[in-house]
Image 1 (cartoon, rainbow, N blue to C red):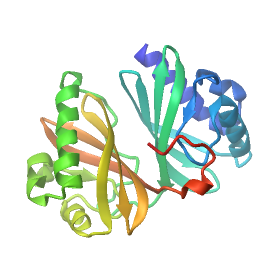
Image 2 (cartoon, one colour; image 1 turned 135 degrees about the horizontal axis):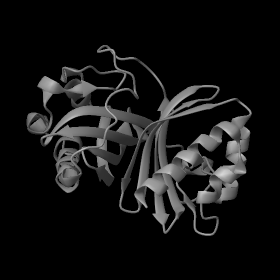
Image 3 (cartoon, one colour; image 1 turned 120 degrees about the vertical axis):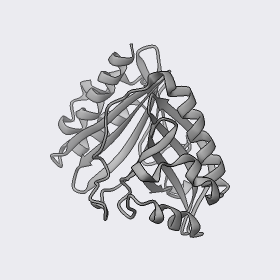
Amino acid sequence: MTIIRKNRICTLLKGIETGDPASVEVVSTEKYIQHNPQTHEGGEGLAALFKRLSLTSPKVNIARIFSDGDFVFGHTEYDFSTHRVGFEVFRFEDEKAVEHWDNIQLRKGPNQSGHTMVDGETSVVDKERTESNRQIISSFVEQVLIANDLSLIGQFIDFSNFTEHNPKMEDDGKALIDSLEREQVKYQKSHRILAEGNFVLSVSEGLLAGKHTSYYDLFRLDDGKIVEHWDTVETIPPVEEWKNNNGKF
């Protein structure tokens, strides 16, 4: 079932290239809850969006795809009129996607260490460590990112073997610490921690330079330590601009 769901979400996302309405058949039009505030509800809303996007001759690259219980989440790259990177999260009931969240930003980089926002490891291993890795990232988010206790950061990250994909940072970790020390980056609430084996996705809410912001952070762990990190950061539009009333999170 996990493989089937992953494949159906890959088909859905690749449907952006063609505008084929059949690609959204995985979506339950009766139950679907859309959390992208700039997209209308339901499969019909997605079909219209895909048709519109297909006119720009888009390209979709699914860099990574994971599953966690009833959730399938992917790390994606979009080449529309602009080049963007995103995370897509879908919740399933039986074989239909009934809820969707995402976080998308303009692609930048490569960073000073030569890494792009989507390259790096893709293989899922250590599935027996899924729950322990989930707890490690949950503690990291709460204690380091939200509480901003940077004295604990070495307990979670192996800086001797660390790869950073944020376009503004680099592998040595100093840029990460500098960024968290600035008041412009504020993690305030953790909404969801999804995990499969050595990969864990954190969904958080906060502020960036005073603006309401959604933070999606993907971590790869090895032997209980973070060794690789990707992210997207998206400003949340004001409520009066939303096309649905479901909220970003």
